[in-house]
Length: 241
Image (cartoon, rainbow, N blue to C red; front, side, top):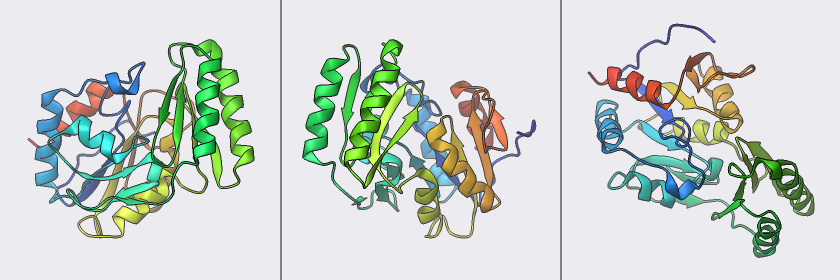
């Protein structure tokens, strides 16, 4: 990764991961803290970029809207299973989480005390940040469940095992967003912090944009880095001064 991160330009398209990039990760996804300063920063960036700002997250878009209220930005939720191409626009959804899978996930979570099960619209996430000793069992359980559903797969992220639709990732979501106005024709910039963001980094690199990984890791497709969430806020704030 390069040491010097170029500035954001007003004719760029900005794509931002949420947890671990814009906000600090919490033991429970519902406990994240969104400072008012971040809301103001995102609103200013959205105006500067002419609406070419989107959140690309593993969270459902409805959850992102709650966390970022009153903002309703363009977004890709659940790693791309949901898309909202324009701020305040309509959310397009690809599939529904199978009822049988949701039932099995509830059983798995109860068998692993301390884990947090996040049932979403199209996918689910089993968080074990508070009980890291359950990582092997959580990942194995999700892998076994995915083997029962040909159209689903395991995604192993930071202290979380996700049951998500196969063939859907943040790179494809980013590519779909960047093909339409107001993102089309702009240099894409994507900031993420986890293995779930690597597909986004690869997509941005292919498009000649800026791929930025938050935190230090041994291997990543990102070509630039920022130390932590605070550094992300600082860099974004510099871009709107």
